[in-house]
Image 1 (cartoon, rainbow, N blue to C red):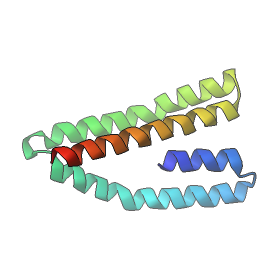
Image 2 (cartoon, rainbow, N blue to C red):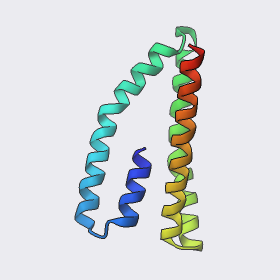
Image 3 (cartoon, one colour):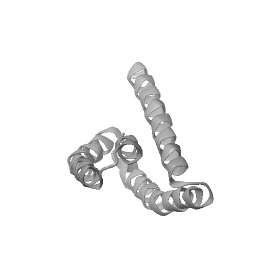
Length: 110
């Protein structure tokens, strides 16, 4: 969700100062949401698998940053930064849709 908000801000807000404020607010929100996310994982995952799942999530998060930079910068250098931002926006919308679908599926199963 935050990725989509940031992409929208970069694409449609021409003022740099406003982008800084939006990025600060997104970072603040991440600081508030990440502990809740960790608590949710701790509550849902069985205790005997918790370290494995936490390690996997951490690995995916650490791989995602440089991989995202390579893809984003590659698209920006080959085509344009606007196309790269639209790609990030599209990816974010797809991920939000998939997350909503999985949440509905999970609540139906439980």
